[in-house]
Length: 259
Image (cartoon, rainbow, N blue to C red; front, side):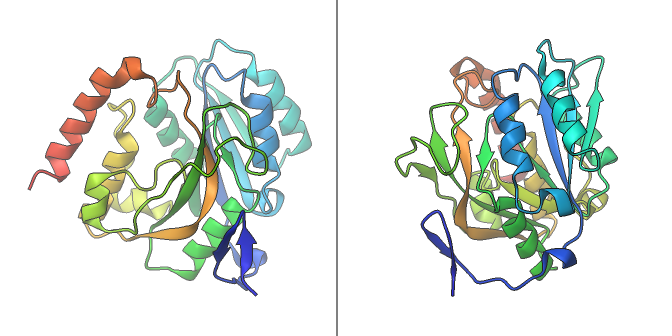
């Protein structure tokens, strides 16, 4: 029988959790007081969190008080949570690169403080990577909400979602399909390098285009496994950032897509 994930069918998967490699979840913390408690609650409830995950939380010299909540959860999950506080903010992709260096997992994913996941999202992504060794990255669709700290079970999306196309280099040139819901092999960075930390918003798109243009294969999971908060003050969603965002995207487009 096919498993039902929030109204969508996915292929029945008999892969054992015990067979999966370790997964490193990288999270950057900056001005996250409003989200930190609900984020920690959401990520630690993942079906494979305790058995297969390490959460690498990097505090980018945040002026907030997130550390108190992080340490509370670290006491609950001492074997699963790594925490590091920086003296200065290197930017989101500088944080991710540091997280990659700290990661012990064979698989890596990022988890944003203001987004949420289906309870079995990490398990489904990891199983798909495990079953398709020729694929470097998997991704899935996300519901979209305008309200913070909702969950996959209770949200106001009314079915509004990012529905991404199947992977192809041509499709990736049009949009960043992995968006907020990718899981990838750590080995991708050994082959194609890490994130370019000069970018402030589109560095992940550049990373995926760099890899895919050199032959890396991605795959879409045809299920909706994330909840994306369209944060009016977020780096990529704040309209005040549109000017420099467009410059970044144009530069990346010229590098990989203008042919």
